[in-house]
Length: 344
Image 1 (tube, rainbow, N blue to C red):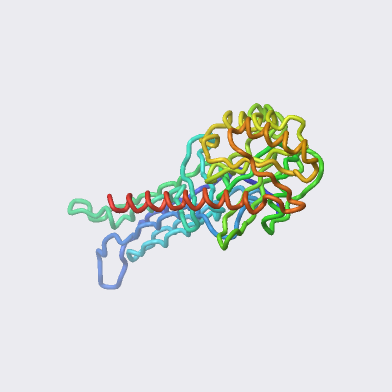
Image 2: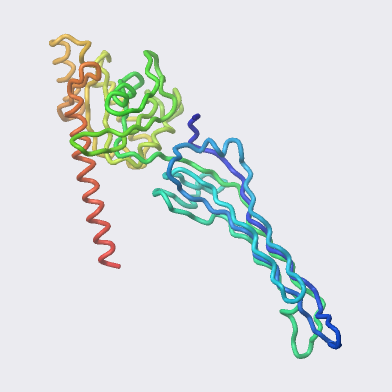
């Protein structure tokens, strides 16, 4: 399935049905009076987060979505049926923006959340509604109101517990494949990963979701390479695993380049808890390895984990470090939620 995380769609809610102009006709009743019914209401357009989706690819092929029009009113005071509403089914983590792609309409972060993004028009009143003591035979009715129509942007930000960041070929995809059942493309050339990948890691009977995104290079925030747009998929993570390849000539500079891009992107990513690791250490001799560990420790301000997806070295320790941050953050979030409910 092709990955698509942003798309533009046109939506239109249904128009309301028109009111009816009708008069009661029955044998032996000379002046039956008005009996035109009201029109039905137009259908709404909803967006709902559902389980089982992780891309917006369906909206690439169907970009126009229209709800049904309400049925017109009829004689004998019969109200027209309401038009059927439609629901756009999207993955959890989808944001809806106005046509300017900046004004946020809603943010659906959990499965089952739904939001009405276009309201159907009300049905028009039939002539029975306008009967008064001085106008007992009105010959006019209201047309139905038009439904809302607009163009909106859908933008997906994957929901994961931990995100993998680093330069291209830092070993992010290899790490993901080693600790989860995800099978991302792995090759020895820059930007092998062009689309985010998700996997579920398990350590000590605890599960958490990992997100692997395309690598960052210097100037990514200015559009160099494939840019930094995919950083949106780690905005919601609780912790970052920053991988620096042992094959880099200057591991300290490699670390600083990625940190600079995270800070330039903003949105609080640079402030997230970070676990630093030197990957692909199995290719180094002991002396070179110790030298690069010292350099990375000085740049990051903490001792990095030493990882090898080939031999499995350090993988468990890194996963446990991620797990500890995630468990603590979940607990803090539960405490905040409980406090909020208590205040309500």
